[in-house]
Length: 532
Image (tube, rainbow, N blue to C red; front, side, top):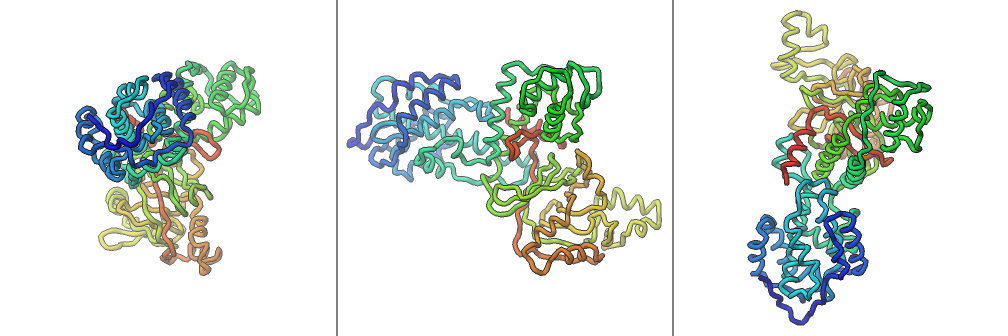
């Protein structure tokens, strides 16, 4: 059991009677905690006299064994404080305790299937109407901290690195001291608010859509659309069109309610917006792809949101400076400055049999008029059989022997096009041009052997060399067409992130969903469900 060392500070009853109203129902809990927080507005614990005996932490782990994995974190946190209370001051619980209770008692809102352990114990301690004994204050104190580390692990950190390695996610996981973060949260009036959490911003944006889609599913308004017609166009009329309008209104693509059966221009714009959000060809036709997505169960969309909330837990909170990010299922590359998108371009990524790897690197070199050193697998499976069938195969494909393999010489025929961009890595992945320009017009662009083809490689080269007076537009064009390989080292490396998100919220606040082209979502969903 706990005892207090400091007898000079006498704590009042730390919990307002209004806290009695806290129930496990989310709305009721949030209302009650908001009222309690209002009473404690602006309070944080900076006291150092109210303490508990460090030896008595051991009895805490006996009573709450599920929090024993956080023993190291708890002891480091309290050792730095010299075992002074953090959630209390001389007048009782501080505001952040109420804010935290609202979060930890509603993990479902965070996309977590697990139930918070010892929540009933915490409820009992917080809801007591009697004067809480000093030992109970200490117990409440450490229980709040223990549940904080549990919450941080589940909500902000996610499944462990060994699990993400198994699903071939090689972007380095974020590194953060949750013990230090707790100290800062407890000193901030906004502590434990959604605006003050150590996580990539997409997490919070997706969380809002999780709530919205869960409410839609609960309301039971998502009914299937049945039709024997393959497609509907502008000016068509059908009861199906009225059903489509209602679903698009629910999803936010159509701004006003419209019960007519006429395919009008307002619906045309709504359909195109829906197609854009789903990566479907924006032809404004209600065809098979649109109907398929409108008929997909809401649960499938909820699960897509959940797995991408999980992926958001792994990324750095923010990346400063310039960087590139490729989202494989989106088939897009984005150039960023801090969190602002400067420009984007279409890309071609690896097909399912030769997946583009999820990892990060640093772009160092621009290579004009590159050779293509044919990978061993392509040489064995494609080039060698061709050479065996046709003795002129190499000459006809502008190739030459190189060591134990072959390479394709620079020129407009080269599979890497006129320029490539290297961010050295063990996966042999890089950006490059391509002579096959027509593929960029496809809505699904998974055609490569794993490397990433750029729709506008000259734009990339111009952007990377814009601060180098030696490289103007004319010189870049000449180097791309020179037919002689030339390496250029960038003055500063640019971070590159190759990621995999099938759900995200765009800059206009709209939810985007994409096909899981590498079948990674299902495996991750199984891991999330198993991570209770």
